[in-house]
Image (tube, rainbow, N blue to C red; front, side, top):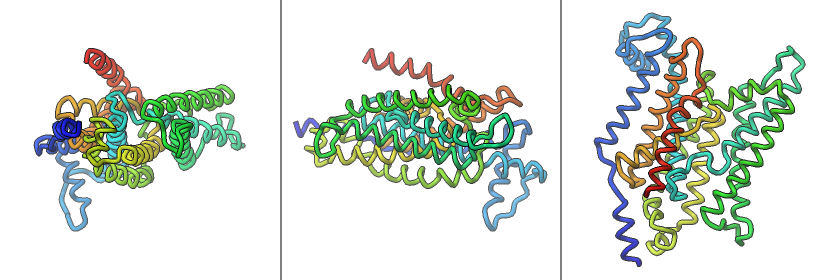
Length: 363
């Protein structure tokens, strides 16, 4: 069995080809330039690129953009594009991580109740802010700092409850396997969603603001949001990418992985914590944006290979590009109105989910 497991583990370990890595970097660059150049005020992509290079200390180039156009690039669009890159990379990498941990191609970053916890936290913050507001009849609304913080805490509490429930009855704090953890996530998510629904019905005057957050948006993005998310994205990427080989070994099963010298339980806990922290941070600044963690890793798996040495780095790059282009579509398709970015990703994600599900059933 040891020889068979070793053969299977090695067969799944592939190298990240330079061509695919270059394609991922090119996708990020193209998506970023498109997000910066396209909008109500169309800009020359070459000029936009020169303007970005001019931001490098010690470099002085003439981009050809007017002062107003340069301000649009650096002060309005650039923070939003950078935030879209970070959120997309985080959600896609978290999705690939969960799929490896649970050995399920349909796993997504919200599997353990992070979305429900974040939604309840954000809703509670909006309701409390409205309750203490003594101003206009339209309702106050939480400050930009309150909602992200409440959503972040809510997501972490939800994941903690899920793990505690999945570990109950197993002794020494160990959960009883991936299936128990997934079922615990479903139970916790249902409970927290019920609490959120109660608050929305109890305080109907806040429904519009809550719905706006739940639909996902980068419209209020600023450098504060970027700085808030950046350390979590970097920390998550470092931890997850450092364990990508262990995920390949774990794909043959916990017993076989243990026979090869791996520690599946410890690796699983580390990766779940890292992916959950990244997901909570991303949700706190962007709202709920679904399907990114399913579409991107699974597409990479189909095109580039099944090894997590390939899936995880490419998911990070293509996830960043995908969400940036989705945000571009959200703000331009019905301009001057803006479509919630969660609607755009669901438009592509729902059919993709059906295709993946049908393929899994045939397999």
